[in-house]
Image (cartoon, rainbow, N blue to C red):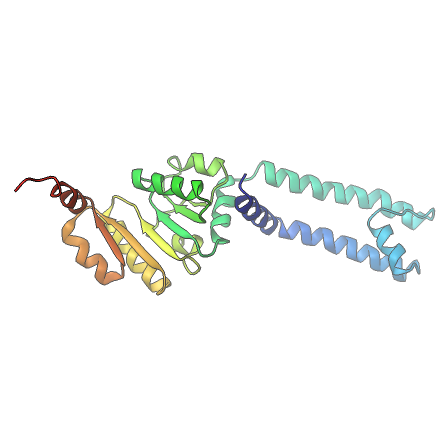
Length: 232
């Protein structure tokens, strides 16, 4: 697992487990206070007793050790189960929201797939927005930052970290998606760079007016290449 990805996954896991971890910290903190003020132990010994590293022979300490370790064991098991039996799409979505200075790729099309592979190969921070979960299932299982949602919805771009992203690439084949997402992205982040693949040449000007910085037409690109070999 790449270091950047491993750190991102760890941050996402800690965020998802924050309530259980807070409960555990509260339990141990309350125990330390009890040992300090009820048993009169120095702070050092109170902390050791709260952490089950030191067990005194009195009934209070023995009872805390038995029931407390049972409680901690239960919390640890809950944490493990949450990580092993979780909805991995939820974690991938959360990972996407933790990114910054990244590239958002909309649409896991042939172009989108190549862009994702390029980002992974070169260690570039990215996230994918794709509404068809089955198309992106391989990335979800690998723990990549993916938002399974319709890019045109009000939740998708914020979940992908649009406010902190540096570039948006719309690789969708749907011109309506390109128009809506371009407009929404420009309103959400005036500074982000927006590149759009456009299947219809007559829509290039519309996309530019909506805020697209770069619009790429497949037919125009092919024409420019073919004219290089045309003999006049």
